[in-house]
Figure 1: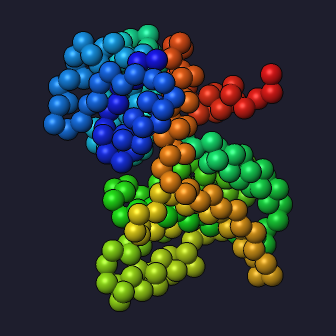
Figure 2: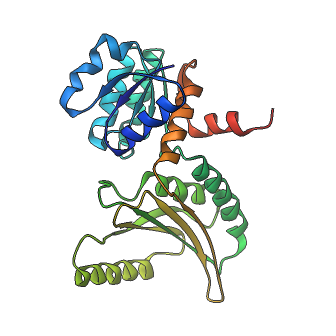
Length: 266
């Protein structure tokens, strides 16, 4: 398969390595210094483009790829306010799009467990949920798209929950005194969060690839599930697998469409 890469940062480079390792050809690499090449013959020759750029550019990148007749797998988050516009452009061009907040197969399994747990807690009013997500200090948006997906899934499955809120972002690249102040402020916001709202706390520290934790807490005990990524390779592999899946399809798809097809028994 011929693959174009849009965004050649940490994730783009990981995608490139995984794709080559699975025998695919990289026909174009689009980054800030050659963005006009998204309109090149090399880019148009791609079966699928895999997009990991930044939130402010992702929607325009997908629309431009659709105009060139190229399917897109997009792992960038923070642009979904333009989702309807992007979906319309993809459908009008008869190409395909699969956008997801996280392509890790492990995260997909984790969120299936999360949905089941949230349903089970529906009648247990003594338990209150919290979501914590931790990523590297270079991640620009918060809360993470994955954390939002997790919280929205909890709201969908549990009739006691109405919505989610972000309790802020604690950055460990600052001095220790400031970090302690951030933690205290986040704790106060947590105490003030209504019981029918899922609070999300974002943490940015070091080079953490991504850790997501769901806690259901009561006065007598707590129940916790966690997904911890050991590296970016899991996200990159999932994106390449999604590209392989979407290569002969048209339309707008979700990670559920892809994973259900791949993981369901034949």
